[in-house]
Length: 251
Image 1 (cartoon, rainbow, N blue to C red):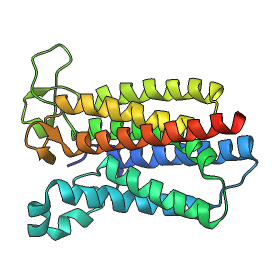
Image 2: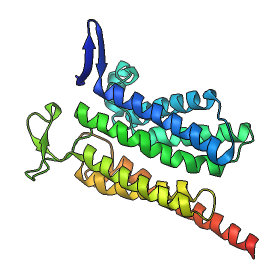
Image 3: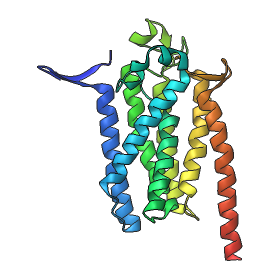
Image 4: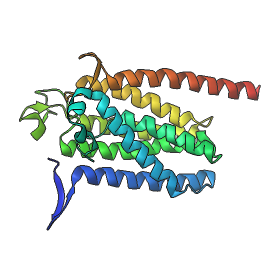
């Protein structure tokens, strides 16, 4: 059961849902503002509807990959809007695919937009992880440290509040991205930096996670760590290739 933020008669607003909705609203407003300010571009609402759908479908699809046997036995569970939550990398991958398709279809420059979306992602992600904290999901391994917290979902066991660790990591990355944005040499630099920085942070945080999730190598390499490694490799290659093209052009 998710904690309630507000209840009036038969209307209940859950904290997790509120955080997701609030983070999404701020992300949309920031994206529209930056697109207009830096590119003199008005992004249509259709673009954001598609992103929302892609994020939802991708997050749920990768949730299935984490526990395929369970969801094959309980197929209705994966379609519950907030049951089980979402897998961030699933949402992220689907959103990037849909974004590139939409921008190419409408002949809009891709790299400047995904630079904006890099910071947009940190906004919705940080607030969304606060929702995870309030919901008690995505928790860490048992600990006796000063930072340990007990959630209803951990059966009174004190665990690492990895949700808050990730919020702090994302906020640090966000601030670094603003610095990179201010001093960037090529379009795409902010986005590529975000992908690599978050992949590193997520890989480290996975060692502290204690909730049930999928592994490529049981108890050693999680799905998220494996995806993060792939992202780092591909992003580093693309960035170096893009930077090389710019240098060759200048020469």
